[in-house]
Image (cartoon, rainbow, N blue to C red; front, side, top):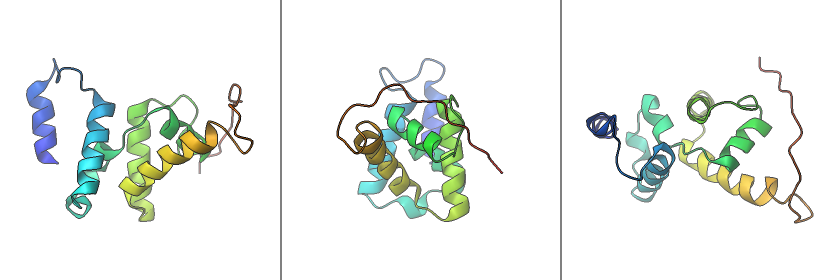
Length: 125
């Protein structure tokens, strides 16, 4: 992952055309998953494979990993830290969170789109 950070710094501040943090994280997550490289991923780099879109964000909020309205970068870091502390494979968590968010939170049990999400209060210890 040090190569990723070096590449990121080399292209900053202009970035890589049409590749933002979410797309880069999706790409890295899938490459690491497909090539079986997760064991080489350091704990400090786990956030790099945590793409956070609306579905992953909603799952993180529903599970009280983060508060409502938490910025995506902070959500990436919170998920990575949770996975590290609980021994959860971060790639599988992210893939499962996306699937769950899209298929369960979007439609719910009745396969109907849900209305606006009510505010949820989480008590973090």
